[in-house]
Length: 169
Image 1: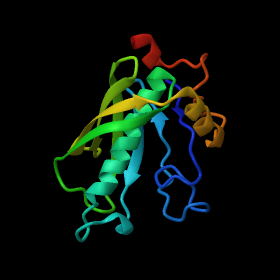
Image 2 (image 1 turned 120 degrees about the vertical axis):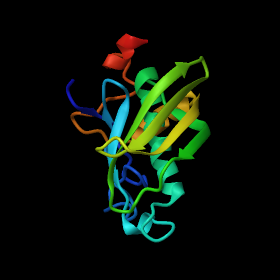
Image 3 (image 1 turned 90 degrees about the vertical axis):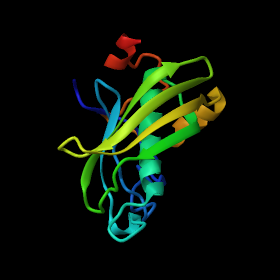
Image 4 (image 1 turned 45 degrees about the horizontal axis):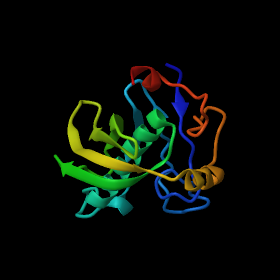
């Protein structure tokens, strides 16, 4: 599968640019055959206890990842309605991990998704399940207008966009 990415918002704390938001992580979300993923390495500013990544940072990264997984499948934007995170093992600051998300179930007004944070040995640090509420079309167009697209980015609202996810529904 060709690597395809998702758009970013320059001011976002997760996918933003440090030149616009000095606290941005600069994450880049990639579409996979299973859903969406991004590499993540917590920095010292993301710690709660000494050398342990703060649970709020873990929650934010999981929320964004599984939310994008739903958007890719539905070709619509969503807001988080519910999010449950299970912290399996503390994540050391500086540990490189992969955050993965996949869409599960779709209803007319919402979708559900799940995800996890794992290292290259398959150790799971956290899991999440969420319910994502469909964003009204006018609001979605407004959001899409301020996103930054690169040449290899999926245009979520483009009705002609297809991924392997579409073929599995």
